[in-house]
Length: 144
Image (tube, rainbow, N blue to C red; front, side, top):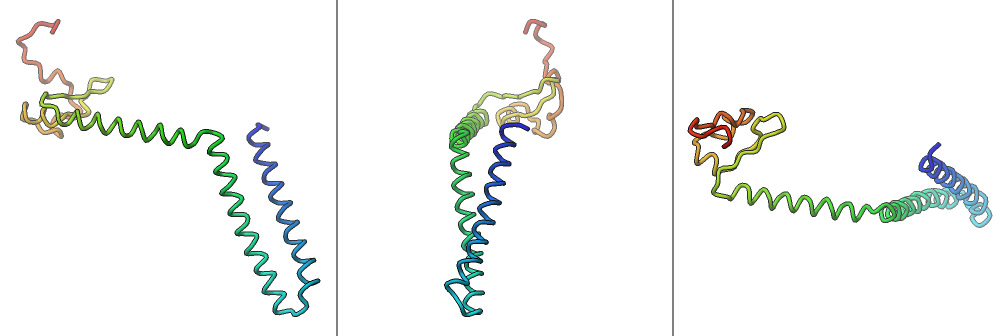
């Protein structure tokens, strides 16, 4: 069993034991202090709701500590920075006056900018998936 699984198992067992302890304690102490059956039932119900609320708070705290422990905030910030850089690159790509096309490893066009559409007269949908060699003029040597 991995350390992570062992830690999760310990947490689950601890949570189960605390739950049992909470309910047994409430079931033993509440009748000692409250004799009227209707009020006793009400406070037993409140004890159950209290445990649910307390459990939610404990889970929130544990999750927050785990996230800070594994660097979840730093990961989110890196992802946000990457997203911002990508949006900036997209803005530059789309606003340049030079016609630009992007192809994948197999040589298929996957994206063209607005200037490409304006210069060539081809719509993006017409050229996506084609090979860029379609746009060779034939006036240049192979070294070009």
